[in-house]
Structure formats: C-alpha cells, structure tokens
Image (cartoon, rainbow, N blue to C red; front, top):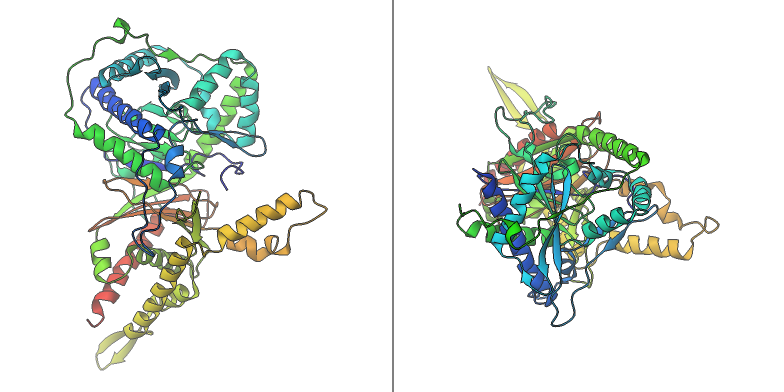
Length: 561
C-alpha cells in the first residue's frame, strides 16, 4: 500500500506529530533537550537489541490475546529506499549476542547534514554531555555555511524521479557513503527555524483564521507535516527516514515519520517515551566541555553534484512548494465535552466520533462517502491495519434524520417550530447506527474485515497473472471497487498520553484528512484539505463538526434516563 505509491510522500503519506512546545531561552537549552531525546533513543535501542520489549496483549474484545510486536522493532534505524516502480525498506540488523552495535544519528541544521556517532562498539555510548557538545558544534557551524545544497528536498519529489536522481548520486563514492550513512542512521534530528506567524494564512472559506501575533497549533502542524517548503524547513528533512525528531529554536517540537514501517501507535509510544525522559530531568545551564577535547567534531556531509543534480533539486523544490501551498490544515479543539461525557452515554468514544464525522460530512454535502478508519490487526502475525468503513446504511439513516429541517406552524399569534423527525425516532436510529459501527469495528480488529482480504486476493491475482494477456478478475476492475476505495474521508484516532496530536494530508484531491485525539473534557481534531479543491474546506468541515457534536449532545441529554 505504501511502497507502491509513486507521488511525493510528504503530506500525501508521512504524518506529522506536534508535541507540547518547550521554552528554550538559550541555544544550550535546545542542544541539551535534544541530547536527552537521543540518549533516550539509544537506551530504547538497547532494549530492542536484546528483544526485551514486554509483549502487549489486547485489553478488550477477547482480551488477553497477544499482539504482534514486530512494528516496534523496526522503527529505529529504518529507512525507505526509492525505486522506479516500487520502493523498498532498509531495516537495521540486530547485533549478535554480546556485541554492541555502533550507532550514529544524522543531524540536519540549515539544510546541512552532519553525521554524529553516538555509540561505538569499543567505547560504548556517548554521555548526554558529549551528545550535547556535538549538537552545540552543529548549531554553531551550520549558520556559517553559505548556500549548502538542499539535497534533502529530493526526498520530497515523486518517487520514480527521486529513484533516478538517487541512482545518479550513487555513482560518486562520496555521495554513496553519505546516502549509506543516512540510510543506516538511528534516526534524524531536524534542528529547525520557526515558521512565520502568517504561514499559509489565507482567509478560510466560512471558517476561522490563524491567531494573530503568535504561532498557533495549525502553524505548528504545518511545520511537522512538511516543514514549510524550500524557503523554510523542508530541506531540513529526509522524508524517507522513519523517525525525524524536530526541534525548533522557538520551542516547537514534534515528529515527521515515514509510514511504511509502522503504524502510529508504535511510533507514538516511542516518541512519548523519549519526551518523558527528556522532560523528567531538570534543565542544566552547565556548558559541556568542548567536543574537540577528546572527540572529533561531527562530520559534515559534503556532496559531489553535477548541473543535472542541481536542476533536479530545483524541480523537486518547485513540486514540493506547490504541494505545501495547496495544503489547508485546521487544528480544532472541540471543548464542549470529551470522552468522559461519551462514556457516560455508554458509547465507544471512537464509534461516537466516527458518527460525528459522518454527520458533519452529510450536512455539508447531503450524502456520505467512502470513509477509511484504521483498525489495528496486531492480533495476527505481522498485522498492520484493516479498514473500518463508517459510512454504513444505518449511519445514513441516522444522519438523514438529524439533518431534517424544522417546520414552522402558526398557532394563534405564536410560531411553533417542530422537527419532521421526533427525538424518539432519532434515538432509535442512533442506537442502530452505534450498533452497526461497533460491529464493523469489532469485526475488523478480529480479522473479519473485507479490505485486507480483498487486497490479498488482488495481489495474488497480479502475481499469477503478470501480463495483460490474463486480466485481473472483474471484481477488481469494476467501477464499484474503485468507488469503494476512493476515500474522500480518511480518518484515524491517534491517542496520546500527552497534550500532543498528529495530522496528515487527504488521500484524494477532493478529500479530507481527519485525525482526532480524545481527551477527558475535549477532543483535538487535525483536519486537512486542499485549497485547489472547489468542494472541500477544512475550516468549513470544522464548523460542521462543531455543530454536529453539539446537536448529538443535545439529543443524548434530552433522552429519558
């Protein structure tokens, strides 16, 4: 699903995660906090090398079933490799028993890449102070370099074009070594500049604009999802790398991650573990000893580039900039209530929000659309996700009833308004929609969904019929199959233990991305659409969602006990 994708992966595939902002007062604060993240990542990698992660088990819906942990072991050290027809993955080989693997991270600052060794097989891990000193060197050195080639922009190009460019870069030994270091690095550290307050700040259609005079959460989401374009931080990325930790001098923090290796749950657990470690220690104002005293400074990666390479970088920058300009993001915190109220209604919070999304979409367009929600299939070996399809007939019946207009009737001198559908009928349809959505969710996580099975059959058919002489079975070429897999509403619950959230772009030109995170008394939505679409608007969708959540609360609080 991911490796066959040929369009640019930023926005279209890679999610971004916004962590609670930090307060940095000096450049030392930036280096110290980042060093703690890297130190925690090294400690976690040691656990992975010893295969010592505790096995997780399902907590509901046939609780106690073991969950596949494979994704957790692939995240650190992994990288996507572009291919002309299909991409591939590099995953780190664990060291042999008793051996300690050498580890390094790639630090990108001002579009310049540095290799920072953080663990050697013969001397062990660098201390937090030593890592901090290395980062201070980078933060001091990078601003002194004029016009470094923004090679990282190539990773935001179309996959076949990037594969061709990479193959040409590999012809030079120095470039080949650089690419090998990047691919095999533990993770990428992106030391960013903050985006302007008014970044991508067009007047939303029918919605609310960005807050003035400050960086709001929508601004932060743009930075984590794509970096802001070639004139900001997009060259400060290597979008193929699974883990890119982003630390901005103004305190913005987060992650951009490549999706083919793992789902959000595994990545979020790791990121929040790193952040908890970094935040648990008091900030130190002590300047570490200069790294030159006993360690060589980080190696700056220098490239051998031909005119054709520079032209490709320009073309990649142009394409990515247009994609960035086209993305509309709306981070919306609904504060009317959260999962505490929903649980009091004896409804699964996820089911509740999915039906709210259906109602919001119906109120805008008068119809439902194919909706994707990821359902974990980790109860099965190497399980990833199946698709919970929330646009059920029962959901349609309920949203239709909820969207009926009021009628006015003259009674004497008074106008009396009434709904065409009674609350009792709406509640009956609500219960049926909840039951259908719950059943759909449970069937998927227990392996009884339809999409993964159909995908397996389709790929098996392609393998057994590799030429056009033997066409695919009709089910995979029928218009209904294409309609069913055109997800104009792509959704996912992204639960976090911190006040953080994740966001991503739509998967269709006229579609929406809708990530949500339920908290006790509020719900965080990260909604996305494309400005170029004549039919979508993330800001209008946020308003419709607010109205839908309010009307649902009204309906459920009016019903008899």
